[in-house]
Each structure stands twice: as structure tokens, then as C-alpha cells.
Image (cartoon, helix red, strand yellow):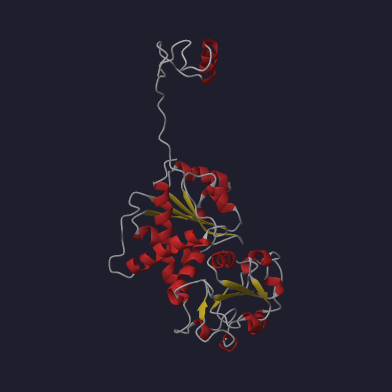
Length: 353
């Protein structure tokens, strides 16, 4: 492109053109043609899954619809696809996990990704490396997907702001556990056909539960009516803001509900006495056959795991083959995480940056 002095193509005088060119430090040839400057290709802008809060119902439905298709694939003899061939998925778990980490590992491998499980206990983090330095190190390795679980709320968001890959929150402190809520939503939808209008009671340690928060957000977005049932000591101060009806007795909390979702006591997050004793807690808030009579006759029983039998749920109820969908939740977790990996990497690939 050439500018003739004084021509209308240049809207400044000659001195202005020379000044602007000098400030920008552009390299020109003698005939004022801009010389091409080599640049690195733009890396696609990653899209993350960090929380359910503020996620619209249409987006939740998109995840659930795709996950439902992956359910059928996982039940077929040929479970593997090459959708993520050539991509690298790293599981970075700062807390213990069986179901979630294994589920993400299976999901990644069934889609053809190279999956690496980082052992935090023997990593440089134990040598004093900061979370930011860890992010910079991983970023230099050009990962495609990073799945993170961390004991501090907001830590996964901090990592997501520092890396150039897709980041999926596998649970951060008391904040959220989005893929658990998605798999719980899919479990309910497959059994009931819908979520809209259902009455769901979430019972137990609401205060320390990221699962409860994510499920409250998802169920409200999808039109369900959410109750929480717990002693006052195990309820967060902002529970009303989350949009849940509060009950302090199982009998009233479970009255006519369609779904009963039990949560374990997260003693590892407790620094004090939140209940008088385990025995007393089970007596008042543990799910038994007798307490379940308050719910609808066909009410489903759910639990994100791991279960503490005799603490928040009785074995007779947990193993009820007609009403318990706890093992369904485990199965559907793989399908949901396959859908998340598919959609997030698909959208990233289509992003031009």
C-alpha cells in the first residue's frame, strides 16, 4: 500500500505521517510500502468450565444432550473414539479423589487423548513452588486440557487466568464442582425424563459442600424446586441467596420430594465441633427407610460419594435397587466428562482468537 504525498488517501499532512510511522517503529521500504513482519500464529482463546453459577439453561441442556449420546457409546463394545487424538489432558489433583479423577482419565482415553495424572505429593509443589509457577510450567508444555481439583476456593480460576489451555474445575474448596452437578442432572433426567418442576431435597453438610452449591445452581436454572435439609451449624450464611428452601428436620424437608440427595459430613474441612456426635447426627439427619416415607413413593436416592454408611445414609436405603441411583451417577460421570471434553475442545478449535 503506497501513500502519495498530499493525496486524499492519507488524511494527515506529510509530517504527521512521518511522525506516526516513527512512533510505531514500522519498517518501510524506499517506496513507502509496509514491509511484512513475521508473527507467531494466534493460539485459540480457551473456554473453561469453572462453575455452574450463571450458566444458562440452554448451555446446561447442551452438555446434557451430548452426554446422553456418550452414555450409549460407553455401553457399546467399542468405546473408543479418536476425537482428541494428538491432544494432551493433564489431571492435576491437590486433593484425594477416586471417582472424579478416574472418570476424567477414562473420558480422556476413550476420546483418544494422551492422559497424564500428575502426582502432587511428589511434584515441585511440595518443594515450595507457587501455584502461579506451576501454571507457568504447565503452560510451557502446551497442554490442551487441564483438569484441576484444589482445596482452596478460587484456585482453579487463578490457574485458568494464567494458562493457554482449556481448564475444567474438578472441585475447588467450598466453591463448586460443576461436572458433578451435570452428571447428577443427567441421572435425574434419564430416570424422570425432565428436571423442570421436580422437588429435590439436598441433605447433610451443605456448609462445606461444593456439590451442593453446583447442584443448587443447576437445578434452579432448569426449573426444579430445591430444598436443603441440615442442622443450622451445617448451613452457609448465604443459603437464602442461593435460592433454596431451608429445613432443619428431615420429615418436613423430605415431604413429597421427588429426589433425595444425601451428602457426607466433610470432617476434613471442619475445624471445630459442628455436630454433637456421629450417633446423634445419624439419628436426626441420616437417611433411613422410616424417614424416606415422607418422600414420594418413587423418590430417587442419590449420593455423590464417597458414602459413609451409618453416618448420613443407612445401608438398606443406599442399596435399594429400585430407588437408589448412586451407581448410575458413577456410570454417567464418565459420559458427562466426555461431553465436557468434547464441547470445550471443539469450541476452542473453532475459535480464531
